[in-house]
Amino acid sequence: MKKTLTCLATAATLGAVPVTTLAATPEAYLGGNLGYYRFEQEEFPNSSDEFEDERGSWKAYVGVRPNDVLGFEAGYVEFGEVDHNGARFDSDGLQVAMTAGIPFTPNFSVYGKLGQLFWDRKTRFTNFTGDSRDGDDTFYGVGTRIGVASNLDLRLEYERYEIDRADVDMASLGLNLMF
Image (cartoon, rainbow, N blue to C red; front, side, top):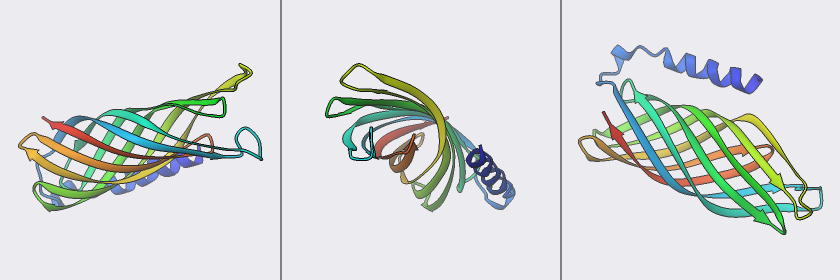
């Protein structure tokens, strides 16, 4: 809960920058990314084991950029299932984030991202036992936006998530359709 309040307070503070000081036309967008992620959890399922795997993933999102610097997004991310020595970990989640970027040209910018992931995960072991949990954790990332057409952007991103004490590093490539 404390992380959620911190994230919301940060977003509200940064969102209070007067839009009139940053000249731009607001734009909404929807997008999707395909990615590859690395999952690592120490002490899984006990202190003598480490769970590590890599897999493909995807996400879909909607967002708005009120100016050239700030943006806000909401979306869904599917991490899929990873396995290690008969143990399986399956996770996905809803995310909300704020982006802050530096536009170098009208068609190229770099940005940072800070948000909250509301995750759901299922764990299964070889003896058919398992459990399911949900929760939320703060995540962060960096990316680049390259305009390829008047209403289409290419995005390259890296994001760092934490899901139930597991570290998830995701690199992805995607497209934004602006309207």
